[in-house]
Image (cartoon, rainbow over all chains, first blue to last red; front, side, top):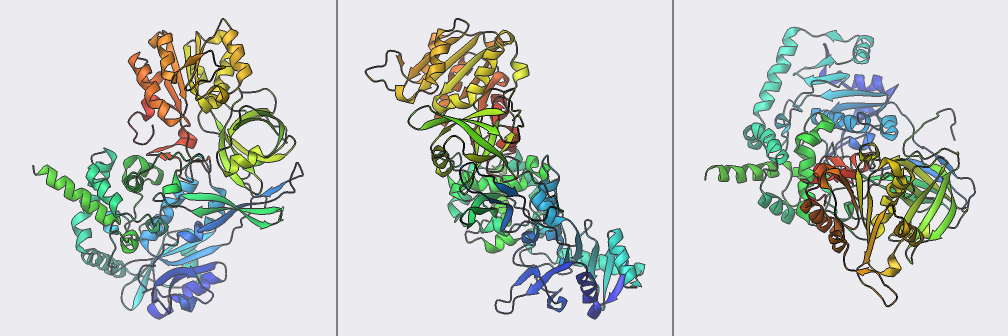
Length: 355
Length: 278
């Protein structure tokens, strides 16, 4: 554990920028929204910025990503096909714990299954992760319900916590520790850690009522969804409310579905791209010839919640697929973000139990 | 090009060449392919490949030939969408890309010694043909072989030469029907389930393989269940939009199953309870 003066915190980002392409939370001047972006100058990073509007998923799983490029000449002329992606060392500076958890979900899905996704791996390799404890939660946050915050517990190289005049820095890896030693940072004392723990405990009490009331309900809803006990009426309502805009999938730190399309880059050359897709779209499961096994929108909607919350699906992430960032609630025009759906299932269940 | 990097990726196809094209019906063609490297595909009956057409895209196609000793294999394709229409536009000698084979096919080992009942509806014969031909090549390893085939009309019957050969063999019970007949048709008329009353099976000894259009599963399963064939001996192949074949893109999910990996062939006992599977 180390300490650094609050005003000096970006020195760490500066040091990382010699070896890594640094990404961090930046407040966009026009909109005032936070985005987690590539920075040319580390002074753009604002560690007190609210949770970014979109998760850092795009850094390892871009919205449109080339997985292959090829040249062909027609007929049986030779075809040149090559995997086309490269590794750039990246430092994510000031990641929130929910977003780190989202990244871990993607890691387990893309790297921990039978097939290792080389495209993802090339983007994910050589990464330095600096997390930032949320000493104050944001309006939509419910990470306390999904065991993913407000402070990161593992998976970081360095974790920062604003403890007043200083940041407490915890090293989670050898390379994190080496960086602190190289920068000759002051050692922290037990009281500094105690202060961090006090602030985390306090942060937990500051969450909106949904989070404080629903801690047990998220896991209970997992049970309901897994056992098929969630009422049909809930899905019908959720289906009626869904605009099929796909925004929930795009802002979700753990959503990983993609489409594959070939786009021409010349007369006889193409890039094969994978692009984000959403299970809310009608065309998501439609096949050539028009057959679609998931026709009604409520059918498609309950699949998203099944994917995030059922036990069998959670095997692929070794935890719930939801990381409690609240972004789906924030962007959903139909009010069917994760917290609300948990509430609906809770309400249905509670009213039935009372009969 | 940076040859130094030597990146590999399961998304990169192998170049293959069309050796021969046979017109099966007005809308279906059979493509005989070989992988240029000389590699044998090494598939099991019921598996599929991802076919890349350069400048068009990629899609899953089931393999219609039995496991082969050489590097060739067959794909039976209906021109139904952009990719398959473009595939129909190719000619012998043209190149395409292949990834795979992917998924779980029919459990050939556990079928040995059993009576086999094939229920093929229309284009469902294309994937089933791989196992049918395999079982005929290893005829002694199996009990009775019963094949029920239904087409919408006489013009839509696939592999007509093979159907004729099967109907002549004494070691196969082959029955077929068409939904709608025309003047020249002398055979059965009616949906495929009408053929069930023509056969008797020993439920405990029989494995049933059903492949056909989605609506057929429901009715064919009723017939099979009525005869009390154990659910774990009923095998179905599901069609889904399997974009990647690797369990990543998500499009073929049925709850916790990825059809491209866990299927496309499933035992009925595996998917009976799954919404949207059938």
